[in-house]
Image (cartoon, rainbow, N blue to C red; front, side, top):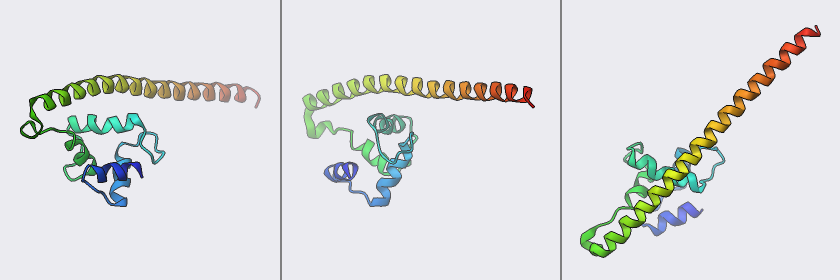
Length: 126
């Protein structure tokens, strides 16, 4: 509902299915919701050119641009300073996301090792 309201306020309303597809495209933990980190992934994917031109996420990312002729130089300066700060924060979040993913991989590997060790012990009792 929050995403729907935000897209409406940005004058880019989406259908219910469009919103679900937007969420699905960046929903890493598959909970059907957008966390702050997943929201930041929208802009990372947009910068990398990984969003489809007709997707709602592309529209959202494109709405974060500024027209200097409308806003003026001072408005653009403020906008770009905010963008730089957001990029720095997203880099921090990207590193945090990578660390979490690596931790999940380590945990999965440890689980496999424990299961293999258990099966080895189990075979000794047969």
